[in-house]
Amino acid sequence: MHLPARWCDDGRVSLYRDTGVVLRVQKLGEADRIITLLTRRNGPVRAVARGVRRTSSRFGARLEPFGHVDVQFYRGRTLDVITQVETVDGFGSRLVGDYGRYTTGCAVLETAERLAGAEGEPVLRLYLLVVGALRALADGRRQAPLVLDAFLLRAMAAAGWAPALIECARCGVPGPHRAFSVPAGGAVCPGCRPGGAATPSAPVLDLLDALVRGDWQVAERASPMISREASGLVVAHLQWHLERQLRSLPLVERPRPHSAGSAGLSGRR
Image (cartoon, rainbow, N blue to C red; front, side):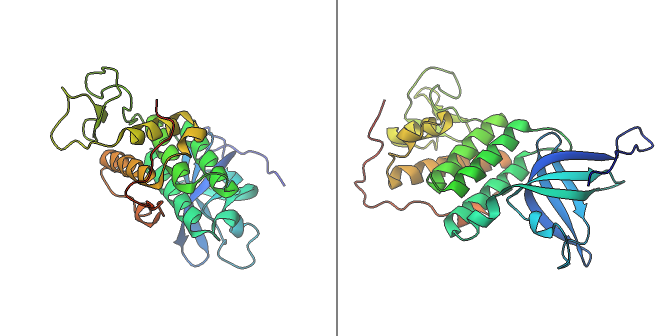
């Protein structure tokens, strides 16, 4: 049943609907929860779901992490209140039985919460990236670590933190360049290379560029060794800008190199 919209004293409509992804849940009192969602039109929203911890709750199971839901909210004085929930996509049921995909999904949710910004401010691109990453993980057609790295690279780009991969991060001279410096912002030319810069193999930057462009045919040819090296750069770049470590990332399963001589990307540019 859809309730009619009411107006608050400040002129705002007190009921509103949005579609969102459940990022986190917290206990509140004996039966309630605080639900953190990333919504399509209102950005991050923290709202109270009353009575959802009771076995008789009508929609408690829908308000779990990974849930992609259509929600009706009532504007409260401090926190909004969830009054209706309908499932759009049940990603969680397809992730919880697979440790690798589940932990990867947790990293997607935690990263999204850190990057989402202030409550009520729309971040449509980030919302779409989260939904796309969870759908890819739930479908199981892509390698989970590659899905995560593609999400992290694109989410950083949406936040204005995209690492330079082709041009020098400092002077802009076209590459490819062999050095990569997280503090400098990505790939750097020999003239701009600071002390301590890493020297990834050429296929590593090729892989990162393929993930940004969505070229899965190229990305999925990467060897486990190249994928791990690329993931290390992505995570280092993200955590440098966040200025903190993400708790979920150490739990993510990464591909193990078969041997020291594993081949890289077979299709170098």
